Image 1: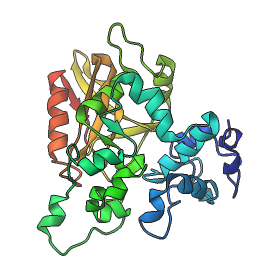
Image 2 (image 1 turned 180 degrees about the vertical axis):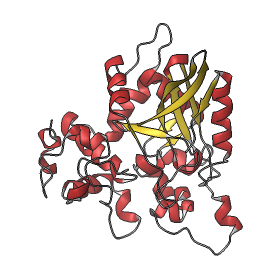
Image 3 (image 1 turned 120 degrees about the vertical axis):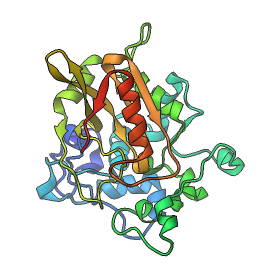
Length: 300
């Protein structure tokens, strides 16, 4: 279905035929739909939803994958609000976080009381930038150029889940377990049909340039309806067997995923960011976890 069927104001600037599948799959041609006035405009979620609704897509990119690193949350937020009448933060809290019992450990916009208390918030740093004092990170969003902005109170309180969702590692693991888990007695939020659709529509991503690759795990991954699908290899009697793993890499080394075949979900949360493609602590940790189940992540 066209996105405009659910979100009327999206039907502008040639976006009338962009489908929900294309939007969820980073194929809407709006990866570059970003404000030009720096950080502050991005802190107003409703204004940014209106901004992307009125944005003109890159026509040659519609239907082709291009990672919508920041604008994705505003696009999904507009779609959800149009379809349900709820804001993205309210919808996720009511439909996902609260049913899973992690509403106090995962926030799309940190409540002011927590920000002011500052007892549970880790400060984000980029050690490589600190070592190279006086240098700057070229290209990418303001968050990549100066990750210390994550520590600003106004950024923590803002709803920008593409960039600043706050979660504990336990909450990340519980999130993926709740979406896809197969533990006895549990009904996952997403149906088995949806999981199979994610796997079926995933596609291979070519390694990107350093200015675009904003994770540190360096894992080979495919994209399926907004999720990333990794292939871990399992040494079987007839050679290596590919084992699908569903999750998503985060900026600087955080990662969450579930291994459906093992009924296990994993969350890794870091505050000392590492932008290297390989050799990070997160990559080593994921490799060790996979090895416990006789698996080996495929690297870029």
